[in-house]
Image (cartoon, rainbow, N blue to C red; front, side, top):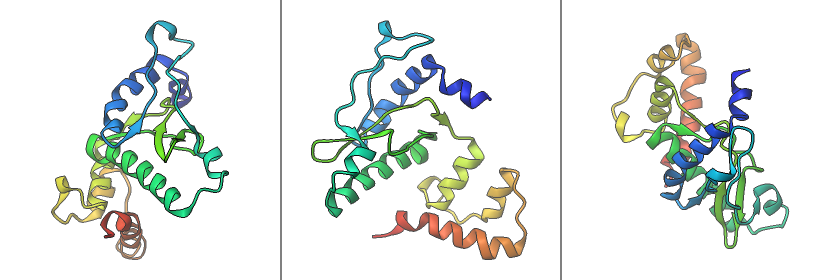
Length: 173
């Protein structure tokens, strides 16, 4: 499919590395740099990401406060890209997040990165109360823009509680 072909397009991935590096750096998250002369259509060579994958790091029995700080850093950077810039690292698995030293975070594997469609970005910004969508908007209109029909009962019993659950961490003190 198209997404599989994009995942193997190393020139596209190199472009995403260059585009997302300053976005994530603004939140303290490292991204490897593509090495242009050593990369091409069939291979992507990058600088080494310090540390180990989050999968390996978690197996080392880190204390709760350090784990929470790393999780907060990952979520902060990921959502900053989504909400502020409308872009998403669409494969934030524990194998694509690296942790070094005292909890410094890095992201790798940008083959699935993409710009979010405007209706979806608008819905996400509405759910978390992003300043650009500060006025209260009926979420049904947001879902309609995505091509999803929601009846009144489903809206009341599913959409509103789901939206509150999703937005909760962003409004917690």
